[in-house]
Image (tube, rainbow, N blue to C red; front, side, top):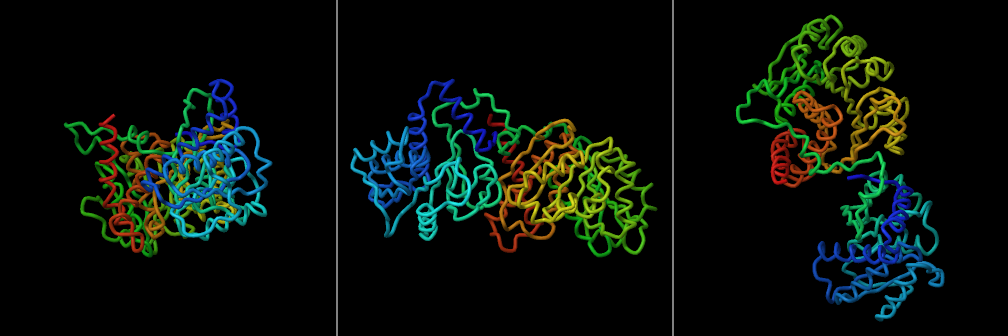
Length: 511
């Protein structure tokens, strides 16, 4: 599903009115009804329940007036509070304000008391900067009450394009957004404040409008189409050979985790190339080659053997646990220059190329980079905080600088394809699977193995990265549902990868 900026959505709204001949007052009616229906679907019957609706004086407030009318007609005890002077309500919003009053709903200056659910319709996608005065006070009141909040289109106080919050902003349990999800729901504070996101079309086929947004929301239905087919007469040679190059005396677990994840993602063969003390105890299904190395780490003298191993592999996972000794870092750069096998580069592999982007950019074979914010910062020569402040720009810059597919890990991981040098706005996909329990050691190594496995099974780098981050996050979600967030480890996630893939396969078969 496409994701749009606030500016792009305003253009689409205008074109829907012009081309579709649908009056704005009708779109507003449909939007308010869609929010009401979402509230009922989530929280059940509202008859006799206290519901508070907080409205601004603009279009978002107009949506709120419609919600309030439907709530009242459904038997809810509905209180409406308006931020600002009601004399400033105009246009379509005024039509619905009058309709709301005609059925007996009058705005209250300051609602109080226990409430079942709240509706945030204060500020819409066009709002910028910190909320002021009465609006800021009402946002504080909304957040102070522990009952759930449903946001209309976007939580008030969140920038619809950047996700930033320059002042007070609503924390929603559910956001009902219209036509297309807004980029700000996935970035910065927006990702934390939006809660569950539901997209409603509000009575118009938006896909009939030209929408060249380069942003995409990764969803199971589309991703299921990328799964490799497994015929009845399958054999292990049909599902790819993954080579994991990594490990050191100090970090033997990382390559094992990557190899284990590759196996669970469906690879026919998985090998590990490491020093003898650098690979822990891999599963018995993994083939291990012990290289000579030096002082417990791989060194340039191991390059000829690694290149031969890579020739027999369909994809290489390079970097997990390799360490940052200069000789090891030199080996990584040399391998990238001389190997023509597709590579997933992670961890110490990323550190090795930060000072030499050309060893990635000039490769004949594709490269997928999977940095966390700190590693992305090193790739770009900035801080992790600067990456997090503008993740969208950071992933694009990393992808175009290195001429690679980049998966920037974190809450709502971003995938960008920077291999087309003359593209002004390279495509970016947003992943929404995953949870805070995945903030533990080894999770990144698991993603490396998943993406490497998908590459070895024949997926294009962009598809492998997009499907990989989704499977990774979904397996983490499955683990969280079964055992909780606290104490969730990479092995828990890896064990649940086959179940996620099975679910995707069933979706594919049902279509």
